[in-house]
Amino acid sequence: KEEMRPRSHMARSFCPEVVDVIINKKSAREIEEREVTVLYADISGFTPMSESLKPSEIVELLNKFFELATDIIFQYHGTLDKFIGDCVMGLFGVPLPLPDAPDRAIAAALEITEGLFLMNKDRAESTRLDLRIGINTGKAIVGDIGPINRLEYTVLGDPVNLASRLQSEDARPGQIVVGESTYQKT
Image (cartoon, rainbow, N blue to C red; front, side):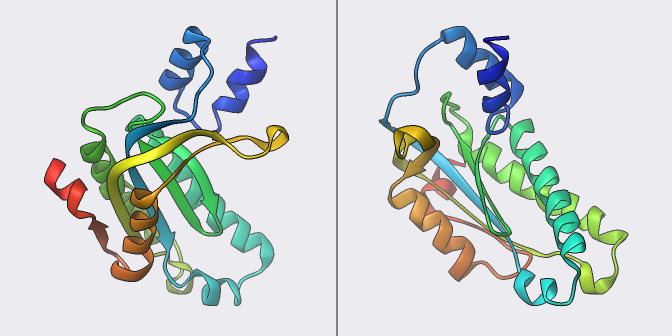
């Protein structure tokens, strides 16, 4: 019972294999500087679309997208950092190092895009989703950050900010834009 509580909490952010390693190591996740590949996948035009939908339809649409994206991020041994409105933030290479983290992030982005295409096939044109994705790699601060009663495992730093800007400012609907460092490593 004691092991199940942290396991179920960690399962919200990490794939099952990573949870097993963390539980078996019984080590605290310390704040450290690590190389990480960050993926932001944001639904393009979601705010205007949501204005024409019922709240239950918005929740259903977001939940399907979040489930799709999270399952794929976990499939590539990524970590779900958070949902930011209608955006998913995924991490690759933390908490466990992955030498091919940039490749995994790109593969996940491609598969999320393909999964969304299939999900859209059964939807009315007015509720079809399109994504803008930004991916970047670099050294960032990684660990449990926040007040003691609300610690969250996350990353901070320039590579994170650049991934966000690639998604929000450079990517067009339907595009995956990678930063120079990610490009060089793949």
